[in-house]
Length: 414
Image (cartoon, rainbow, N blue to C red; front, side, top):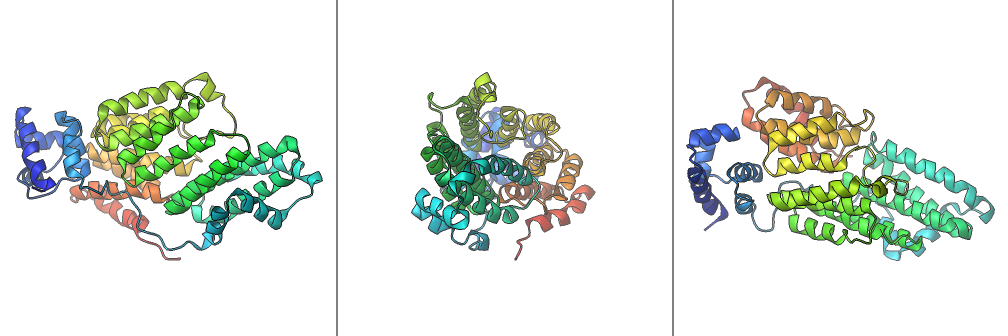
């Protein structure tokens, strides 16, 4: 029996046990009664979004969602395979050779005499902060060549720096590499993202910081999260929660674990992980950690924002919208990439709650900035929003928004 055929009868059984008519159920979920009827009869498949809401409303602990997701697949959040990126030419040769080759490239590119290497490091540190800010308002494709060059440059400076400064230079190079990996993921190249993340961990170890390799697990878990691999996300995140690690890394790992649990509707473990993340990230040790800060630098309360994110995946869009409304108001105006990331999830939560016009108003403002900050990961939520809004074709707000949604989601050709 197919998953669709198994899900329908189980959904009907749970609905009837709850004492709900099909009409009452459709009103509660804000879904068309005819569509739900066909799902119960096995004539239509249930999307992961619908299964999440049914799970949450009926207290099914993710059972319906597990039936809705076919083996080997996850939520429709992956990007189509991208053609080789012209701005990544030579990257694989660098990564395959390891840190030694990266340092050699830095020396060939701009090797500095020992007498000038040390004074350059504060300037490179300031450039990192500037590039990180620029990443909030600039396309990844534009930043990647510069980030790759700067990573090689700083690694090269480490080879020429004094013994007192060499470790700091390697650690700074590792942060450049880690940020390069994030921009590669935003550009839709998960392979490059993982490669640069691995390089960041290697550079950090060379600089005496074994902890960044654990944060690399958190970054890898983000790739599996967007691939819809909940089990992989949870497994990687758990590996980065050793008591020997700094509280901030453990807190960020606990957040990622919560997102993995939410993908499969495991509310109990999701909320436990969020509680752990909130405690770790709120500790004095986490707030006074080394600079530059690991993870997002623009979200005041990462655990709260992640709670809103997870509530949507758990099938609780109204609760998600309330949290995301509050937390998104706290984001700095210049952080366009971060505002888009959580803003579209906020719009999605309002749309799923039936607040269609409000959802369209939120999305309309954000769509205007997407050409400046294109994002393969944010596009996953934009696609989900487009599907959600397609259920309300009679809404004028939806009709007005659809062309802008289509333009953002249309493939581009350089």
